Image (tube, rainbow, N blue to C red; front, side, top):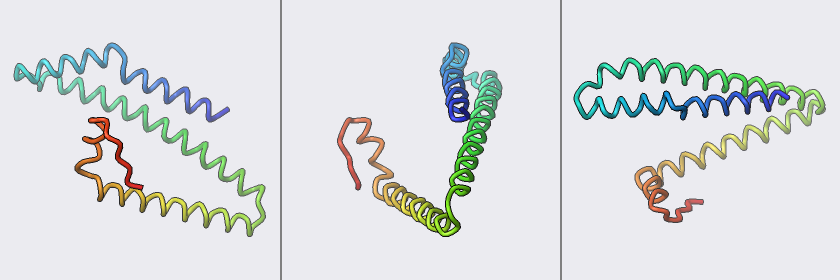
Length: 125
């Protein structure tokens, strides 16, 4: 299935982010920063990051295609009125989720990550 192909590609990208070469590059960059020679390593880091971003962009495009194909398949099965109802409900859900996220960001922008790091239970909903 196409979903499985997207999952496999995402897994491949995640493994690549944490592979031995990438970790060695991060270690070298940190050493270079301490010793004042970060410019020499920063070019390598930039190339590596560009490669990672390209791979992640590919995965996102694959996932978007799967979602679009799924949506089209659903709309083909529904009556025109059901399509209108479904798309309206989908839009309302997205709007509400965005509002919830904005509310959380405004409420917790300076303390949320720190409290999670300290292991505190922090519910805003």
